[in-house]
Image: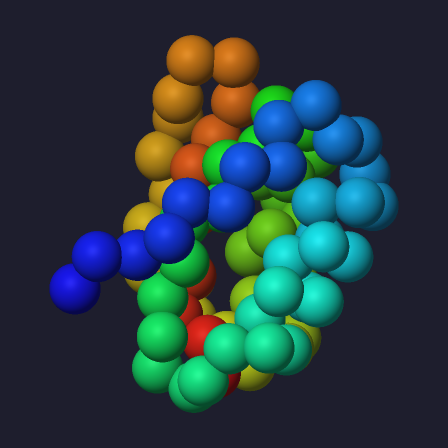
Length: 74
C-alpha cells in the first residue's frame, strides 16, 4: 500500500502535530500517511500525539534535515 507523503518541513512546534491531526481527521481509519518534519521536537511530539489520539506510529526514520513518521489512522 502506497502512503501519501505529507511534507511539513519548515514548520515548528506545534504546527506539525496540529496539521497532522487535521489531515488524519479527514482520513479513513486504517489508511496510512508519511509525515515529514524538520522540527527537532517532532521526534517527541509525534509519538505522543499518536499515542493519545489513537493512531498507530508504524515507523520513525531519520532523514536529511529531519524525520519521517509513518502513521496509520486510528
